[in-house]
Length: 327
Ligand SMILES: Nc1nc2c(c(=O)[nH]1)N[C@H]1C(S)=C(S)[C@@H](COP(=O)(O)O)O[C@H]1N2
Ligand SMILES: [Mo]
Image (tube, rainbow, N blue to C red):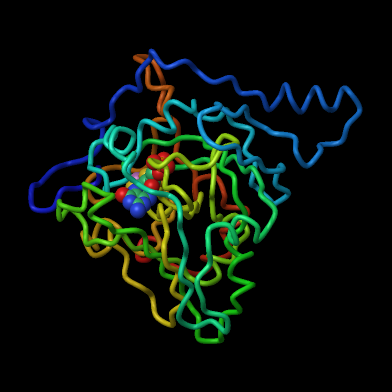
């Protein structure tokens, strides 16, 4: 966890538990699948899954994305780890809470309200959102501000697809994402650890960058509740807390919107929250990270990459900005 208000809790190494070794590792089939298709003389077909579906939830497949930087060749983190080591404070602050408690989340029926500075405000049903653009599988590195990382095969499409369809006005400079806050479904709301609902934001040009994604699934299936069903944001060049789960409302606004983590501790969690190994968190270094699944006794830490390795794609968005000031 990041912090617990007023209790001086220091996050970091201590709360990183070793993922249970008993979990079977899922085979990473990308090379095999791609190689096999290539050998058989097929071009990469649209339905060619890059990862094996675990067979737990409704299938949701996506074609390999052509967006620059959208498919890392790094090995995806095991499905068991992706779905059991989570931050989703609406269900509690322990890493295991979302997996054990998010069964009470009802991901359908679901709708998302679009409001503010757009020519086409309105309410989108989940079904309409699922059909809005072709689904893609994108394999992103994800870096939590706490110092751990994963590689996750998401299914979804660029947030820009939705933005274009609702036609932002000239005054739309930022987006605010509002997530579900329902005490009946979310036991963690009883604790005032954050200002509910959990809110996040992006600048318009960040939101339009094709890597910024609306995700509806992972590992070829719909999102497990603990990962933010039925839809969430995924912004791979920013710390994980920007990737808001279980979104119910998107506001187009003219001023930089408030975010839950900035409200909780502005000095520690800025609006931008770009992954940056040179800008330390006030209470710990951000220079290295622990890849979940590699944290055995002799596992080396990995160096954290500028913009989480997406500098070629997103660096220009921040040209001329002092990244120590706009952290
Ligand atoms: N609504 C909501 N979204 C959230 C969070 C949260 O507590 N509530 N935690 C964030 C943090 S800190 C991280 S690291 C990622 C974790 O996503 P994952 O559990 O799917 O890996 O979700 C982010 N999105
Ligand atoms: Mo995080």
